[in-house]
Length: 424
Image (tube, rainbow, N blue to C red; front, side):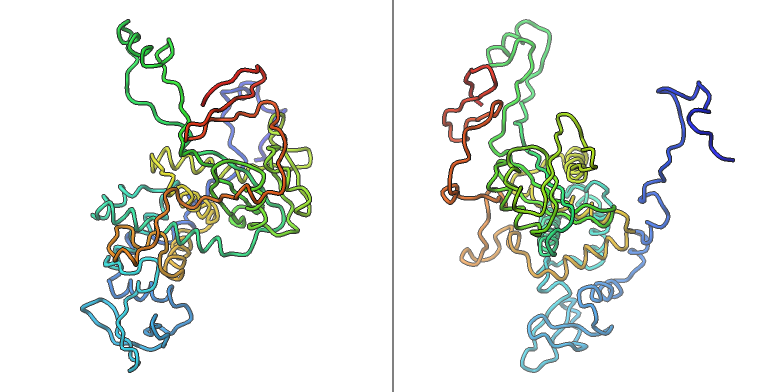
């Protein structure tokens, strides 16, 4: 029987209490077609079967039972060495030993292949991410071991997705700030006069609420999304200290093709996009979320929404050192929308096993000699442009622009329409 149109529905079904079925289907994660592999299936595999399965993903196109020596590149059925759970090269001039993980993102890892596969499957099944502490508890591993392993996985995602071809067609761009405020201490807000007096003396307002203090580690993530249907979108993300025209234009030129059509909001940082690309459309978010022609930035903002949900529900804390890696993980999860869990697991395994050794997290705990350790960055990978290379000044700030005090304590002023000065 056909469903009646809205005008023919009884009056009792209208209003906020109406319970009509939505026209859209269920989320793809709830469909049976998504569940093509389970934890029981992985547990039923022996260690030898797991090694063979991972070997087919690391060396695609190589016959079953053969391996590629990472030292000399020979493709043979190399000697199996049970003592190291790996192989010894058959070439007389090589004869080097290697394992399934030699030369990969997890080079030198002693974890059994079955446990490694199970851990990455749990990583995939976390809809909005999964914390390292939870993974360590589920697999009986040290927290530090899992923490570094997940960072290496995110690093592999960042490098492999960043090496893909530039974005083309309609591209949405947006930015959002993270680690914005300093969390106040637990000072209480009791009703006693003495407690309120102590709060006032501590610099709080008369209502006993702690004012928000801007964190000096606050940074912005800039996301570029190639528009399209779910499962066919492509992403790029970078971290900057603040939004300004020079840095965002540099990122757009790196991530997008010249003939791309870029859609942004009306922030002044995007003004220089006009003339650099085929077309540049801006959405006035003060009055609309989408223009009359259908242009919007909702797909880029969806990345920030999912990242904030992961921070609040899974990770609970993100550091400035690894913020961009967390952003790339969310972009990868958005790319995998619509694919079954086996396809997502194999995509992640291919990225980890074929992207070379870890760079930034290659010697996280300092086990190598000091002269061989990679340099560790203090705030992660931040895109900064030397302002001395800018040809000319960008002019006076517009009304309403807030100039904040720098972390070094320099004076600041705020143009808020009232002509008053304030410090951050």
